[in-house]
Amino acid sequence: GIQVEQSPPDLILQEGANSTLRCNFSDSVNNLQWFHQNPWGQLINLFYIPSGTKQNGRLSATTVATERYSLLYISSSQTTDSGVYFCAVEPNDYKLSFGAGTTVTVRA
Amino acid sequence: EAGVTQSPTHLIKTRGQQATLRCSPISGHTSVYWYQQALGLGLQFLLWYDEGEERNRGNFPPRFSGRQFPNYSSELNVNALELEDSALYLCASTKGQPIMNTEAFFGQGTRLTVV
Image (cartoon, chains in turn yellow, blue):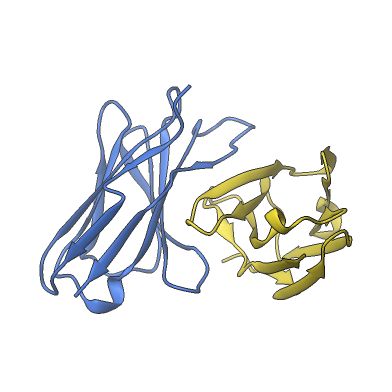
């Protein structure tokens, strides 16, 4: 099956800092999503981004499908940004496959 | 518009028992996915249902099974529970195939504890 690698596995930030999370995938995909998992386990949709660039407030994402990677940018981080960020891709078998996640800790 | 809803929120079972978890998709969504997330781990794909049929299955034993009803809600059954089945079980729904935008939305999960 498709391989999804996220980096870094852990990220510790000071409040106000900027950061970049990366997602590499091993095959072509129909769909790519970024999620934030809150402390209660709920997966919050951040971006549906099979290609191109999107922005939503302090968050933005870019997917370069031809090079099989996606980036999630967090600017001016806040303590509420803490949690696990997952990248998920949907290859041709229509099975949404997740990376292992990046655990982000933002310190005040 | 209601999101994906799962019930129960928490479930405690004894080893060897059966557990039944339920999921109601977003209105208009026909596909339902089930994932298992053991403590501290990523999401492992369990099952995918679309239009009432099982379309794909992850690498789990047959005691993990489910079904999708005519109203597109779904049920996950886990038989002969083992301690390692303790996990957060997440359900997601999408508009189904073949549609270009298949953005998945997740429910809040069912936390299953096997004692």
